[in-house]
Image (cartoon, rainbow, N blue to C red; front, side):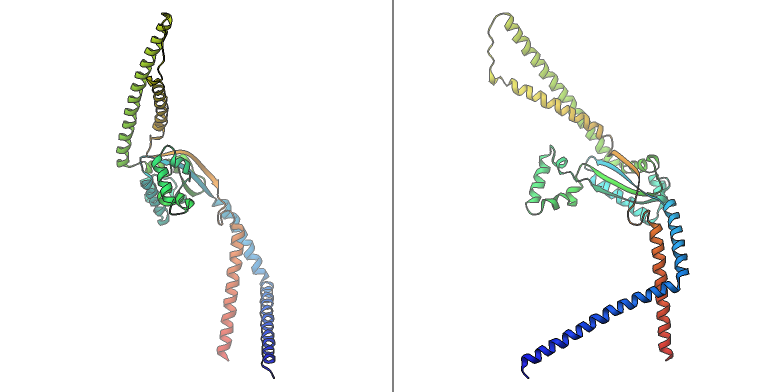
Length: 326
């Protein structure tokens, strides 16, 4: 017999064995499915009881243990981003530890047992980050030279410096601004160091605004004097030649920039009245994450799974005992 014919025979034998193994595999699966069917048939009463009890308990939990999502959009002032993040992380650790005394007495949260978690995340807005801040633009440009711009934008070092952030927390049952939001904000704004920084910062802004008002007043006086001179010359029938190098346009541009800057400072004063300034709050949005609101489906399936596991363990125990008796 040649070598080629032997190879063909070996290949046929291998294919035959593989086909047999595949057939045995599917036969085992069908046998297990049938055994599972028989198991449920033999225990149909228990299965019905577990489904009814699980569904009833699930309906009760879905009705009484409703979870709600809440969000606060905030802006940390005076470079207090890292401070705010560490404070929120501390609150979350106290929630995980079940330290209701700290949450109630130190922070002032009412119904602190209903608080299920809190986290702060940046609201990605690179345009706000670089708006009127050339140094931030140069930073983004420099960091993006060695990596993906999307990765740079979402880097922790960058994201913590975005102007707006979202504090999200969950509660069992509905909450209110007085019960939860205000205590959290009061806790975040309770810092002697940043209160001193805030005082000096506000004082600097007010001094700058006062100086700007003084300069605008001087410019207005100059423009009024120029207007009077022009009007007087026209009445006396004397020719007045306007010199483009008189820098009158520059004076007008300077006034326009100062007026714009004053408007920016007025808005700034509104936003700087707190260390962590809240801009909007959304409360009591029903949560459908994970198993929230789905316990009427989860519990029956869980009970059936545990029942099958116990049945398998009981069958395994009997099989092992019968082997030992042999």
